[in-house]
Image (cartoon, rainbow, N blue to C red):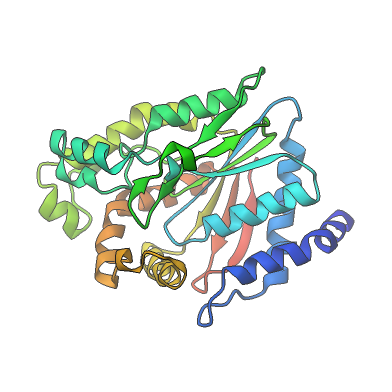
Length: 306
């Protein structure tokens, strides 16, 4: 408890400043001190005990859309840097989406739904593998982190990528499908929403991203040392939170004409529904840390499993 108190006094102001930057007039964080002190600092202490200065530790942060992965990952990164003095790299699987051009080619070759970013197969998985391997290599060499801009739905040119000049001791790797596992083939047969029912009648899209999880993504996720899972109370809340997230983006983005309406968000989230609901079942059991979220978007409990 003494360590938690010391850490809290050191990082409190920086954490609260960041949280404030993420708020809007209509959407405020509740119980901010409790979020930091009772839930996030204990996770950072746990991570610090797992970390080894000689070997890069990869921590995955997973959860449905709008659960707050980016916010939580940023605060964890801040605490690990400020108090524990680790060199931390905070990255998102979203930055590894294939370019719009490549997804367009994929949609013509495999299935039209693959033009929309989201499901496994729309990330450049080979690039993620090479990136992780380069960072884990004992003799570290400078590398670059790609950047994807959602408002234009495309990867930015290499001149805009982030330069990684120092080997990170901890990587926080956040993303909605991080750690996802494939479903049994028989589960794919029954559509779970109107998108699957009307636009994937022959199961080509579902089978494709499920095969991607079974083969290529499995190897990538095996490089992750531990996973933190943010468990939403239901998929209905994931949809609600994703709509709130879009409204926040509208207030901050310079590309307002690209912001999705509620009906567009509803359709977009259908792309994620099958894997998200399966992750709620799987990662609740297998993740190293599980954060249970309530309907008010707050962490109500946390479980350390490994």
